[in-house]
Image (cartoon, helix red, strand yellow):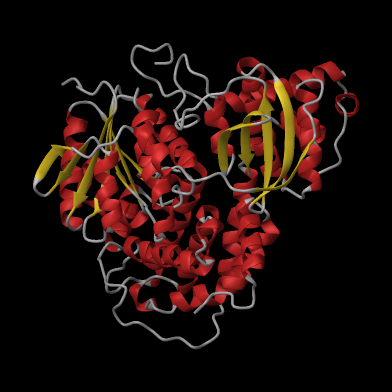
Length: 304
Length: 258
């Protein structure tokens, strides 16, 4: 039987107890396997153990992914899922995934993960994937329950599955909940130099002077190279580079001579044919990446 | 329990941010500071559940370090108030996964320990669950032995059953601390540079002074028996390779990558 999945279908399941979760997840995945689709379960290890047991002999055909340590920053979480989906789609023409969302204890960060769920719709829009995000309805704070309906085009509950009348256009939601960029401290100009290699050498010197560990220095060098390349190719060249600290972290600003852009999903769209991936890379390698229109020019601020 | 009453909020923030930034010494210090709080959480679980205290502590330390990677000090929440949730969750998850039958022989327990170790190793390396065949290869058990051992370990228990209040100094704490930090060091090696060939890595690290004073391409070329231009080409290829690795599109039917 052929799969009918041609692009992203992003749904939520608010389940009422583990039994409901397991029975619905397993039925959903088995239906996909019957159609020749790949199957992915993303959960913490305890959840995976339960699903694996319920799948029985089918477990061998299902990719089980431990996401206990994946939900650190939205861009990194998207990249982790993208890698799993890419591997799966190399083997099957489409996939079904059941992913348990780790929203965490602090209401102050729920907007961040709501934004993640919203941008997921755009990030993976081109993939033949039916992804069901699962939420334990017995432990779900009201704010997150509300966000589930705003970020998933359809939601399944014990009462059935239906289109969400509260679904928000992802970019509109991102603009509404976007965190403010961290305040910067003591930024100073180091200039761009002759070329991108000279720029990296200057930046490397600053990273070493700031005591940034070797591995993270390379992350910043690579991320900043991608941003600088964008500035050169699309932003009319680099006008200035500034470095310093933001909220205790190493920060680098790259100011270009172009008009810039205003896209809250920039850097969150998974790589695809015909689209640049420099911002996707830069987001993965940094703590935060902001784009600002400032008097000095369009500015990308990378915070490590 | 406040976690680290002897740290000022500023010191705590610096330690957490440095840990997230990959500073291993900061990671060690952070774990050292919060280990008593982690151990206090671990004591809430009965060793009669079949979960070793050292495993609980390791999970707790992993939970703490995960919290450090996710924690945003700008939220204003004290770190331990935030991290204790992830420490507890990590322990609960371990217990949920490794709940034991009523009686396992010592030999079975040792077997399960080696299976868990092999599984953790595989997860750390590949970020996916190992197949039964992969576990069999790593542990030396047959598929049948593996399945029987794993089935025996799946009888659920409540973590609250028979909670033990343990006031004795935790002799496993030091081991948990070292083992998890060893794992971090392994993780550090598997960073961007781990995707590169040895010569590519050597050129990049030397040119940008990562771990040693920076050298010019001319100097690097001389030390490797290459021209400066060849060293530049190697660096350029290395960056291109990293770019491809981080931005590989998923294959989609009808696209050139499919």
